[in-house]
Image 1 (cartoon, helix red, strand yellow):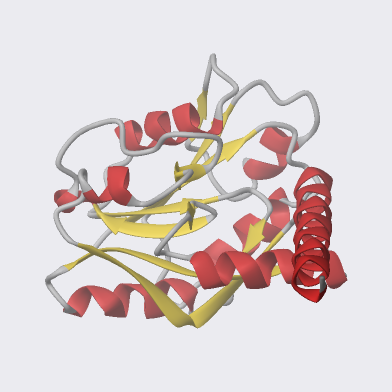
Image 2 (spheres, rainbow, N blue to C red):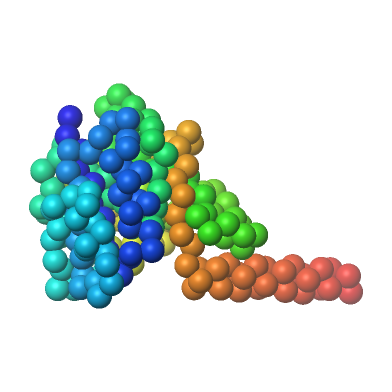
Amino acid sequence: MRISVVIPTLNEERFIELCLSSLVAQTVKPFEIIIVDAGSTDRTVELARKYTDKIIYSSVANVAFQRELGVSHASGDYILLADADTVFPSDAVERMLENFSDPSVAAVTVNIQPLNRNPITALNCWVRNLATPWLTQRACAFLFKRSMIEQDGLFSVDGYVSKLDIAPLRKRLKGRIVKDERVSVLTDIPLEQQVETVALLAFGLLAGYAFYRLLAR
């Protein structure tokens, strides 16, 4: 059983060593770690070379494209997609693999917790954990069985396997996608996602208040 890890990068020196050190410390170690770099100008590649010599250079700075490129170079029976700002507990891969004892399972995802914890990032992760894998599917920690891919073009938009719903992914995988509730990875919640969370929260509160005033008339 060989596991290939694919990590797209672009100026990731802040977290890349945390990510890679957590992967090489797994109880079930990856067969290979593939970095797909889109032209980093910081120390990303230099730091990554401490952990892997399989570095591919992408002419396109697009996370989905970089994942596709990495998967095309992977030789593992299982592919683990990871983001460069994600940190895995030491038994994450082992636990995720256990789900494939069910032959109907094609892919496994997990819960996320914020590396940069504050009330907004905690709320962001809580909402996304509720929605995964039924509505949205983050690819920061996503393990799938290579033999269960039916066609190319598995990954679509900006880090999401499917941005709006999971139907496009299910068309390409010959099996179920499950979430392992036993596993939580740490991942960075960037500022733009925090702003989106605040905006959605404010909209919800305003909508609730307007509905309350309507009922109170």
